[in-house]
Image (cartoon, rainbow, N blue to C red; front, top):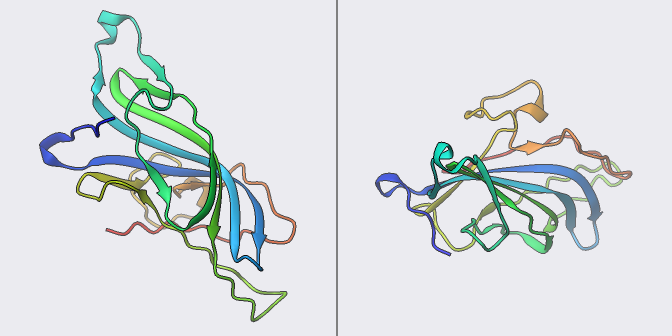
Length: 182
């Protein structure tokens, strides 16, 4: 499938959000973290626009592989178990997909203060095939707003949705931070 063409030679913008459901396992021996959630992606493909008055329909669903979709990956992933679901396409070319996934990422552990240690696991998300001149992956705020100024209530002001997050017995999730590098 071919990458959609953006206006005036600009990159296709893919907004990305992670609905984090659970930390499945944190392994100090393997230095990995396994998380389960939904990678939600939003983009516009002008080739998929139509007149809803003419066709009497405002939304269509496509299976994975029927239309172009971004090849978003976690660069530090050790293992991933994605499942593919339908992509919703609105008449104006807006496309949405929510991909349930289980991802294990490398997470170097600092165990100096064990058992009272704090771990910081960083990972990078982006396109595997395209650089930013063709496909620009940007964080999408959970509340849909465009900016990332500091906020009092984290679940509503982050590209990581933790509203349905289920705790982990041995570990506590104390913060989630999104850094968008230009």
